[in-house]
Length: 369
Ligand SMILES: Nc1ncnc2c1ncn2[C@@H]1O[C@H](COP(=O)(O)OP(=O)(O)O)[C@@H](O)[C@H]1O
Ligand SMILES: [Mg+2]
Image (cartoon, helix red, strand yellow):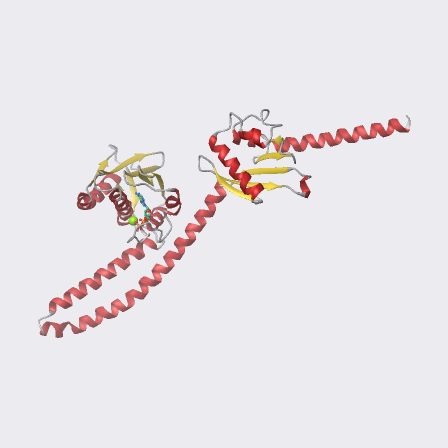
């Protein structure tokens, strides 16, 4: 073999092996669970993987070779996606940010990373990955942290208030005979009952905000709900709204701390009434309470036709001290969340601005034999 032939053969082999490696990596890129898209320095799309094409809901074939402008004019590209792409373009190319977080129509969260510059030979590589699960874990951890802090703060405040109250109570009792002599026994009685009431409030609060194990009894959901609705009747009347209990016929039992669960449902109904009141006087308010059974849980659904909530309110709903009300405490839902969690259940929310809100409390069913 001549030297030339040999060199040619060698470079052919080298070419074939780089081609093989290239194919292998392209194959991996194509089937990566992240979306990957590559533009050259002229802004022409040179590579797009399966996942990214799926996200855009356009076939890969019809995208390859197009410029960004042509992609934006693609007839199959939804308006929503077009807006997102423009936004990404502005953030990453214009403002030169390497990372951009975005959410899609279904509320899933994505992290987009851009790589360009010397390491890319003038190409622009965009990759997106689904970070919803991570975000959710992060949020839950943050929320639990805040709740733990709330527990500690409230416990110490309650403790600090309780001590002087006990001292006051003792001294009033010592003063009582003197007050009786002056014909003022009534004063002593009022002071004592008020101190006891304050103590009760502190006790209640500590009980529900502390991560204590609930004192459970087994009870039919329907009787619990009936009692709660009775408690809300007069207030509903005052607010000009009705509370309707639509009960399931089969009796469902749950094992709960009745006082705590009543408090949770009352909190939610109270919020519903506030949301209805904000809709103005002409609005006829209606709060519906329904139970639904699924495999393992009883779902108590409480819906209202109040003012509903925007995105920001929804995302802070269960945060301690988060409130949009002038005289709100922002504790109702954070305490409720903690109580339901202690019962190994969960609360979910669905809301539309101007339409209304539905809270669903899910609690494990107790099978009665
Ligand atoms: N049914 C509802 N409709 C509209 N907004 C609600 C509803 N329930 C709760 N919210 C919002 O959630 C916030 C927090 O509620 P909560 O923890 O009970 O505290 P508070 O009632 O003291 O404000 C409220 O301020 C309100 O903005
Ligand atoms: Mg409230």
